[in-house]
Length: 262
Image (tube, rainbow, N blue to C red; front, side, top):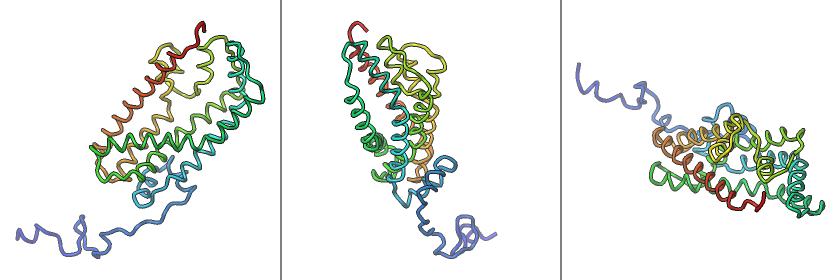
């Protein structure tokens, strides 16, 4: 066989060796997915969403959806949260007027979407710094879109917590009771084992939705930026370690502000 014939495919052939028009090798920009199509696909076919983000940045869709879920969860959790805070203030001897407590909760609800916006901004900034060294073609705006969609499952944490606590009455007789009452209840290792110490506190922070979001971040780094799975895995793992270290630091800091005598 002639080596020259086997060394190069015929003109206009694709990677598979089959002949195709030259213009088809550069795929057309796909149509932007719709709002509900993205929300549905991020749970059942996340790769399609991230592939679409390669061409169409979109952080508004997850912000709107996440903000609505957070507000709904806040409304459902309002009575339980108010009862827990009032019980704790009575324990400390500093009761808060009912009107002031209600205003505070409504303010928190109003700023919930802004809280998501900045939380995802911080997460995107961390991944961006890591990606500068470990990824290719890193764009911050697109990365923010990836992070926002990746954390879509995690926004269900507050909703699950609110639904669970709707039929519960907080019993606050100590500072630990109050911290446990205010911590989101979700399906996590810390809740199942029900232990004490920083390990169990961290295990309570990492629930099934958080693990799901970490997986989506990994997929997003692959498909939205067309990076190698190995590089995406390294960035995701480092981000997870950083997140756990940050959570541990916050828990330790909270312990330093424990009210005396409680």
